[in-house]
Length: 250
Image (cartoon, rainbow, N blue to C red):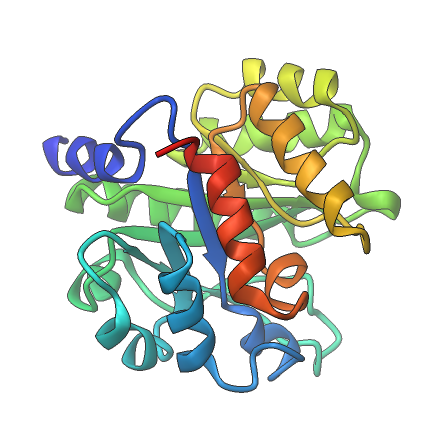
């Protein structure tokens, strides 16, 4: 119990400071996509420009761990599927909380895709991961996506976020529902910190940063954004601008 509290305080040390998390787990599901050809240099650039938490696959810890200063936390993502097969939306557990802790993780990450036929199995896996994390005192992040046209309605996103928390997640990452008021409503109905993630598809950087600011004003606990960051080179300066928004002055 105390272990989880301590680790959550490290992730959220100050209510005025929002979490800057970057998931770099995409190479299992999508392959070495643009921006992820070489993980080490990307991770170093993010570390140098204010990221708080990097989330990687268990195999990628070997590349990232030597680069992490004490101020940057490590998350290990243990859900997997690939776009090579016919069931890419069906995520399965490929690791455990015990294994993640052995790798030095401060957080375990799993994914649930809501609205697909395999949703019940993924919810079961979320429950399994929650029990493992409870026993070891490790926070659990659920990447909760609604796999429907448009990424889900605000009501569906709110349902997915609440279901994730009520199944045991300590932090929920979900898609931005399209407006500050709708995101504020989602945050109010989700009893754990909420991070915005996928679903923000804006080419204009100013508009992108505006969404980040809007979500923080609406009660978001931070961001967990991958491709919309590392596929916008140069990564370092943009990461620094994001960190300024999330961390505030000083």
